[in-house]
Image 1 (cartoon, rainbow, N blue to C red):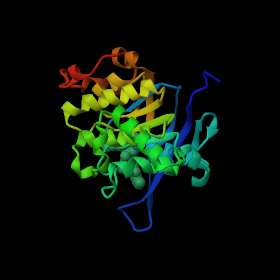
Image 2 (cartoon, protein in one colour):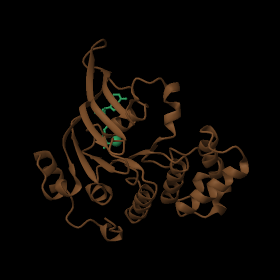
Image 3 (cartoon, rainbow, N blue to C red):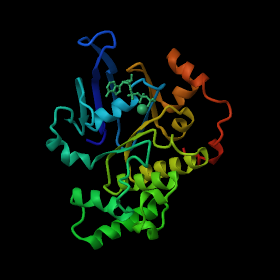
Image 4 (cartoon, helix red, strand yellow):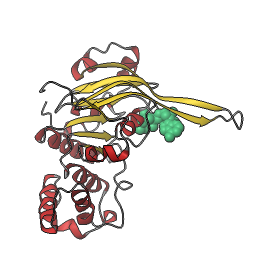
Amino acid sequence: MADQPLLEVKNLSTHFKTKSSASFTARTVVKAVDDISFHINPGEVLSLVGESGCGKTTVGRTLTKLTQHSIGKALFRGQDILPMSQAQFRPLRREIQMIFQDPFASLNPRLTIQQTLAEPLFIHKLVSSRDAAIQHIKEILEKVGLDASIMKRHPHEFSGGQRQRIGIARVMIVQPQLVIADEAVSALDVSIQAQVLNLIKQLQRDNGISMLFISHDLGVVRHISDRVAVMYQGKIVETANKHDIFDNPQHSYTKKLLAAIPKVPTYQGALSHAT
Ligand SMILES: Nc1ncnc2c1ncn2[C@@H]1O[C@H](COP(=O)(O)OP(=O)(O)OP(=O)(O)O)[C@@H](O)[C@H]1O
Ligand SMILES: [Mg+2]
């Protein structure tokens, strides 16, 4: 069905039981994600915004099955991925990819860029020969704006922005349907943020990818999103079209978040306003 959402999250909760500082045996429950529902249509970018600790990363980790959910559903093309075992989920791992905040931590320092990018191709059986892998790697490096001559080098030889481009290449090389980007540009210098953000947006558009774009930075969110979901203390308090969120916010928390945006964002001029 053309208008079926690619992802439909229904009444999702992820709670953590932690030791109480008050006593040895007592447990407290952190309701990191507390009964949230949203959907993402094919080719759409939904941003998830909210202050630190409101549960954004936990949503991303739950949807990629890095964190166990407590209750609820996450229908990917109509199929609930949350009750799946890791083995059942494996074929979908290629389709649901995550871009992390810290490109250095997410790249293996011992692998060359060629090995880093060849690994997912072989794991997901997308190529059967080394030559075919190298061809794919050359193409993806060009798409993320890196020269093919870097293939033999290691992650520490690159700048933060270049490393995030490599991280993006590793995600895009397996042609995902859904990308969850968690603070993907937050660790980068402001001058580099705009370039990497434009790259993510371009690849998302060119490949018709659906994206959950997690960020606390509303300037970035304004640029990249179609719709925005505002999260506060584990709950989604408002979801709307980007223009409605920015021009006509309904919830008092959304209004508070918007009021906190600096009046003159330092790098907005560098963003290409393709929307
Ligand atoms: N593994 C865990 N065990 C216990 N509590 C956790 C765990 N992971 C996250 N939390 C708690 O869940 C809440 C939500 O954390 P989360 O990392 O999802 O927030 P966030 O919105 O991504 O914050 P930030 O903007 O700082 O990245 C926080 O109170 C956090 O301390
Ligand atoms: Mg986070």
